[in-house]
Image (tube, rainbow over all chains, first blue to last red):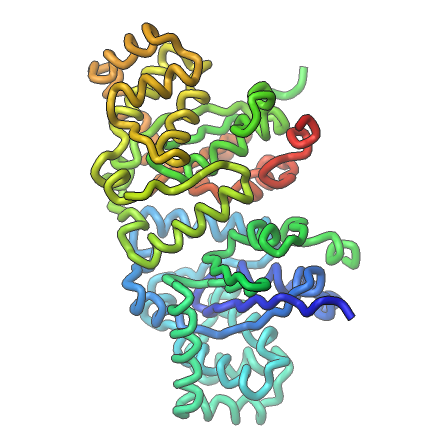
Length: 238
Length: 238
């Protein structure tokens, strides 16, 4: 038996496009159904990955940070940056037309509570449901706040209508609300001022890395090799 | 004759530690004198690199952005991030003890004006003098605001005392002041809200990339290969 894998916690919110850009290199390819059984780095590196649905609005409030898009020049930069990174990382990301309404008015509270209950009840589906919500908001400019939007994402991820409805009814229970709050507080305790945040637990050291652009540094800390956003082990099976 | 190289403009300020982290992968290794004749990527990729000394205080004012270190959680993160990136990128970076005094009280106005006149009169020494100033402020916690500090950096970079003194006398001339102002305005026109900023001019497209963590994306845009922060061509000659 090899050594126990190191643990990575990925704190994310589907309202955060950079969370998606961090999520995919760890995760499944979104392009071809044939790739749905393959992983990118999570199976190449000797790591155990814990997905942790978090509320970005809670992080911003607790840290006193301001969303970058509120500064006009940063908003313009993020628009271009996300487009270029999407191409490079092979994630089909496109900003919604009315970015400000989607991010600052509609938000992600119900969606993140839904992912919280998915994690509690069907953790094996968390990755897929998260991705379907990202595909809605950040790829096809579709709503993620209405019950039917969340149900559609859950069904596309492989859940039955009955299962999805049952989980949706639980999003307002104290258990689910408190769980999302606790996860958000855990990210804050690690020093989060935005998302995504990756916390790497390696031997006696814990590292908190912010953003989607610390993958090469993460590889360095893990003593693993960074082979670009789509590692050859994935490409070879295309 | 091959195709004309693409042009990269690197806008930087020695007051910005991330500017240094962006500068080195383009540039010479700082570790061994034997490496001073070697380059990292600027000679591996088919690119022409223009170093552009810029005033970060001017960029922050013009864009309305706030320095990240003013948010306590970001300040703490930057401290750890810079340490880890320095190890990974092989840049001997250490934050000064009194970060806030050094960055927000002392600043870099004279140092950046000095680099502006170095670029005008001795462009071949700009890289070395910039590095010596970074080594002072971000590696050895030494001053970069007093005349003798700037002269010491210039001499360490290979300038004679007479040469260095002559240039230092010119930092307050309208020509030098205006040149630094113009460069800072040029960065703002490209959409800068901080430094470093790399502007890549490729065929008919111009891309503005912010920060020290877009090197892999830059390689992707150039159609070149990113081989990590210390490419094998450099390591092989160690």
